[in-house]
Length: 395
Image (cartoon, rainbow, N blue to C red; front, side, top):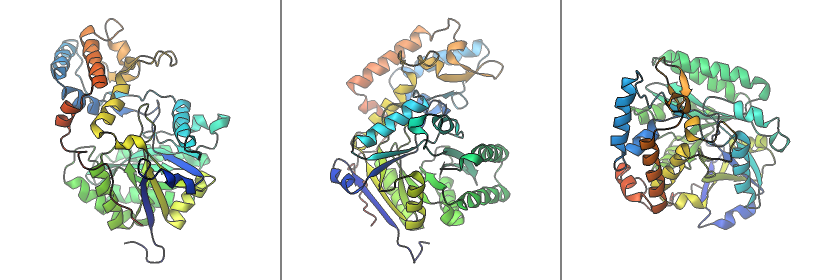
């Protein structure tokens, strides 16, 4: 239940309707974005591409050919890495905020690793970046993604070891596992500089079904104030974010921004604040219980088109990038016949992607230029046809 002594103050604005909202603040905060060290499943990309005309036959053809070579295509275990190196990702997020005339604070949360912020802390221009991670945390019948921001740097590697151990050990659901997760969150909560965010809580990423929402509500009840805010996600559609805002209101939690950027588009939402440091921002969320989420112009575009454009970044070559990271098949990985993860570039017999596959990818890219909203709407029916407003002020 919401505390009676401190009133929650969550506010949501959009840049296309309330651009003046930034004028009362000095700082913008970018939360939840990914870099080249983050492993992302290929399952979603495969599901999207096979929904497009003709591409399913291409994938089926290569599935048969791979089987003859002793390799079974596994799009869940296979992964790709976002194209932007940590410094490039940091600069992209900072520049968007600075164009608003605000100082920038950026927290990068790659999946289950703090490698990017630890690297960026060695660079003068980004040395104040918080040590943060998106933790894949099993709970009950599902898995949640928790944004753990601003971990004390001296404890960062130890916390990563503990998170990795917990996730690996939680192969089966048990009350004991849930209790251990809650205990770890309470321990993190005891550090006043740490910010714990429940990322995209209503996205049933692991296809659990109706039980996912049940587990979400149970988790929020049992974690209580150890969850400091619930994320409105810049890559999820309007309907889901509206339902998430209602979930936060019902459970007595603040909402907070989280762009979830994986490609070249900067985060579609930020937090507005007058905090001078990330630790001050955390205090504003945890102690003052105030959060102002500001959606950027890109969020008013069609959800399907934005997702597709971001997904295309996974299969696009970038000749100006560092050697070994220029081709998309150098950034995508799949187990070989012995189960060892290797770049796709090393698995092609010729050292290059097959012509038929490349032709299909080029056709998809051309279609993206001309607009593929019709087939994508069939693939993801009805998700963003409402007015592109969350419709909640939440004062």
